[in-house]
Image (cartoon, rainbow, N blue to C red; front, side):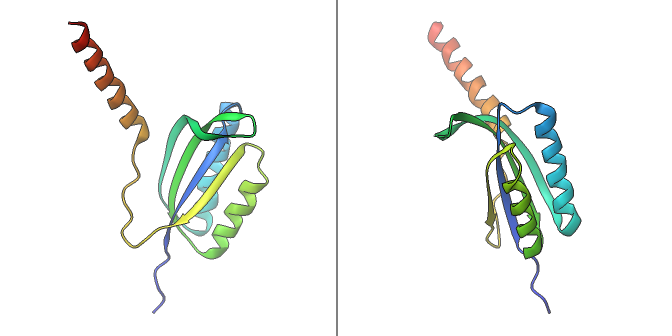
Amino acid sequence: MAAPAPSYDLVILLHASAEEDVRQKLAVDVDKLIQSEGTLLEGREWGVRALAYPIGDEATAEYRVYRFKGPASLLSEIDRQLKINDTVLRHRIIKLERNPVDLPDLREIDAQAVAAGAAVAAAESD
């Protein structure tokens, strides 16, 4: 009996200065590519965020993350297509362990942090 296909996380950093429609087209293309040979389990847009360190002249990037299952040929094709796309700043495919944690919703976490900061500021002004 064949082992089940492993799960992977694909993290893509896109040039924040690229046009929104170009970034959205790339996201649609990645979805289609994954679904052509594998199974897309989840995809999230984490928005534009500061980079931990500058890459070239870029200090920010739009983060997108995908969780999927698929064969090695799919990994090679994803890697090939993202390497030749000028919109992609960096990308990484990570093989997951048997019980991966859920992908966080960074936009929700950011909204909670803003709300907590506003509550603290309001309490300090009283």
